[in-house]
Length: 571
Image (cartoon, rainbow, N blue to C red):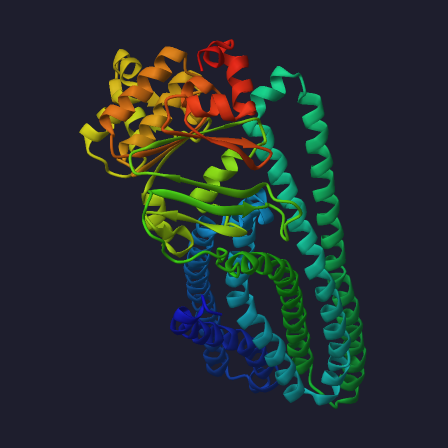
């Protein structure tokens, strides 16, 4: 109703037009009965033509009224659905990472597409049939009662049974259609995974396995759809049976009373016409209940996303003395809620402005989680994170994320040019983009192409090598002149020489940028001002390369394995 409220005026106009057209539809059988019973017996041809012209006018008005009203209904449902879809997409963009994990991306895709489509269809049908069908139904009943109260009783006896049956079936339909949409989610997830991982599937010859998995999801979706449609389809035979029984009673009783001279043939003809109108109206009402059941399930799924609360971050003072650019103060975090063992526990460090922090550790030690907490993708469970003395939990999201330039090991590329993929819609100056590409050691291969910065990038950057992709990602992160540069294992595909040249160029061109570098290689972090060693979510050591070689056995072991023990001997 919130989305329809601004459209109430247009809906009222459409309602009035639809009402006028529907009343004209109801008037036609009555005029026909009057002509047969009252006008034709007089033999007055002029009166017959006048009443016939009246029927034709009613038909034209009914046609135009229904066409105009239906067009307005489509426009109203379009505008309302556009706002719903816009707000839903905006809400999805603002969901926390934890909420995205809970709702799942495939489910959000189906809610944004098939669920909004179901709502759109129902909004349009409810305005078209939701006005016309009840008016035809109630109007037909009223007119038949005015024509002959005795014949009307046979019809009215079936209506309570119909209403009860529709109510019970529709209630069951909502839960069934909710199950259908959940199966749609699973189908979308399978298709999405297969499309993204198509190269891996082919490389491992797993096409038959994935086809079988898809077939299983497809079969589950088909079964749930058939079950829901079967239950909802039971209303049609039920309605036809009850209404046809009533129609049979009307024909038998009507023939008897016409023979007795109690009623007139025109009334019987009009009554049968109204009975057909009532039957069609009841069928339309049934369709509305089917669609309403499906749309209710979809609307509930949409509302679930729109009602997601803003996540509140835990603890910590709003501000602290700005003694460093980035501060982690006894930070604890777990992906599980409530926490069953922390992924990161009691992490504390401080990085000054313009300094470089290296983060190293084994796979699963919490390196990427630390980066996600710094960007507030997840709220910390305990402790606090400060940037320039301000608790990030109290910062506006736009302000917080504007501080960062981030390059992950593998990240998204978009169809377009190299320039567009570095700029990413930010409207950055050309010289900043070129400087960033130069520092990221990407300029050499960019200028080697015929188009230069206008060289096309295919979907998922399929026409670029792994090293070229990583250099473009680093250039994208640098182009915005960030205060904090995060490199999350973003140079793993680069050779040692290129990696060293890139780090040297970044430090020279961006001297005031604080760098947080997550890496697997000691050579990438050994020159950092400070190195944090993580081991199973805890800080195993903090210090410079030389200090850690003496004080942190884990770091020394990693260095010995990677550097052949030369550094350890020198230390």
